[in-house]
Each structure stands twice: as C-alpha cells, then as structure tokens.
Image (cartoon, rainbow, N blue to C red):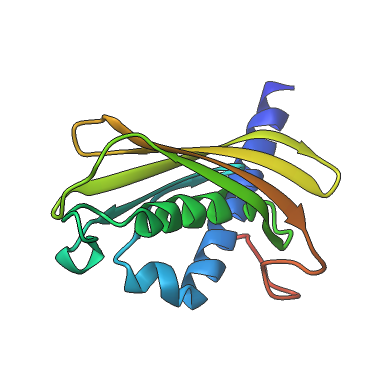
Length: 156
C-alpha cells in the first residue's frame, strides 16, 4: 500500500510540474514582471519576484497591484496543477506591510478546499526576512479543457 501511495504521489507531482511548464511557456505577464517559479506540487505553488523601481507607486513603495499579481500568478499555478484548466472566480488581498524597491517577495499558495469545479486557495506573500507583507485568498473555477496538450505524456 505504501509503495502504491508513493507512486500516486510521484505521478501527481509529475502532472503538476508538466502543467506548470506548459503554463509558463505562455505566461508573458509573469515573465515580464520578473517572476520565477520556486516550487510546484499538486495544489501548491511558490513563486518569487524582486520589486523593481518601476513597480513603485507615489509613496515610493511597491504598488499593491504588483503584489496582487504575484499572489494571483502563484494561485494560478497551484490551482492548475491537476491538468484541469482553472481560472480565478474571485480573489481578495489584504496588504499588511509596505515593500520597498529591491525587496524580493515570495508567494506561497496552498489549496484549502477543492470540490466539484471550485477550489479555495490561500496565498501568503513574504519579504526576504520572511515577514508577511500580504495575504490573498482566491476562489477558483474549472473551465473546459486541460492544461496539457492532448496526447501529451508526463512520463519521462
């Protein structure tokens, strides 16, 4: 039984990684903002981004929209890790601390609930000192289609 569970976990991880690779190829927005994928697992993702000077607002701190986008992209990679095309249905963010230019942010998305076509994911955004700067909650909805192209293989 344990070997079978390990095989299933490995297969699920392989699918999650393949989905992330497929999505990343076309994710011009996340790439343009300098994001990078740190970790992917079924229902989970970690992305990071360094705040550039052109991402700051009139208060000379990171514009909240960029923090939101980092959290949203991380949410997207987590909820699309099952090879089902999934989009955001609703999202909310709470900004906790100001972030200066030059700071590297890391967002960690965790699946809290997945039932039917809906899911709930929490994303915590931290700075380089591991201090929480924002909390994000996303509600996902699966739509028609799969992330991976038809007839693709995740066996390598």
